[in-house]
Image 1: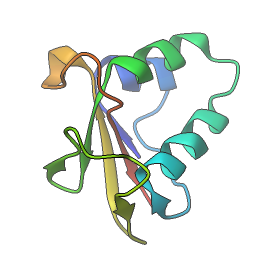
Image 2 (image 1 turned 90 degrees about the vertical axis):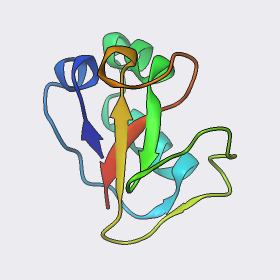
Image 3 (image 1 turned 180 degrees about the horizontal axis):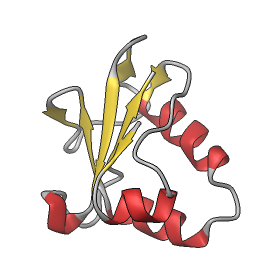
Image 4 (image 1 turned 30 degrees about the vertical axis):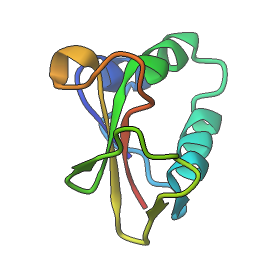
Length: 92
């Protein structure tokens, strides 16, 4: 998972490595890594998600797979993300 801008600041780092799975599973794993970090959780909820180079958009996060070695990126609104999405970038 790669974080940009406010997501990076809230996470306290640029990248987290988690196991591959669906976007929903990867996001849940990342949230677990930051359990108790309310700032990160708030930022997480407003980010857009890129899967590799492609925006998740309106796709169901439970139906999109992030393969081993793949990336998710979390983009806060001012870094190109759209408010209301669950956006994050993760490396698996």
